[in-house]
Length: 168
Image (tube, rainbow, N blue to C red):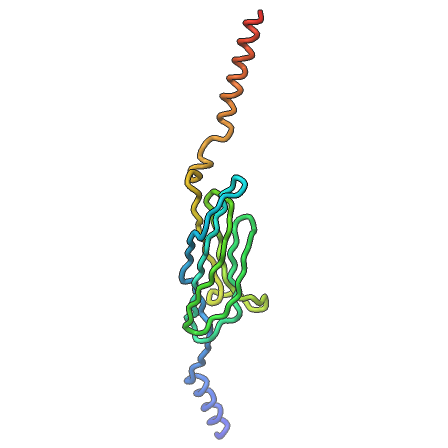
């Protein structure tokens, strides 16, 4: 009887007591960019942007060391590490320089720095940022490449034909 009472009390305690788990909940609040400077060098227009990535920890514990990556399609990447306290919002700024005159898609991701910490929806995520093209480059790529070459070949053939007829 005594053992039954101990077991029943133990089972009741397990069932009635709530288990509280603290966790971090990092979210990407905003991503923005502004043109810092623009200069000419060797026929290129070099633009420098400030990319601001805003993260927030809506959880009830401090985050693990988190890495934010900014990467373009060519593989150029910038990293910054940070930690966030519960309820904290933090803006990480990156200086991004490009000579690419066309529209660029920049991939932004965040997650635990340590490879031993599993990536979950609570501590990692990603988004993209579009950097606009220089004026005059918005419509590049919409023409048929090499179409002008056909006119050049036709003009040369006409000149050769005309010379042959005048030489006869």
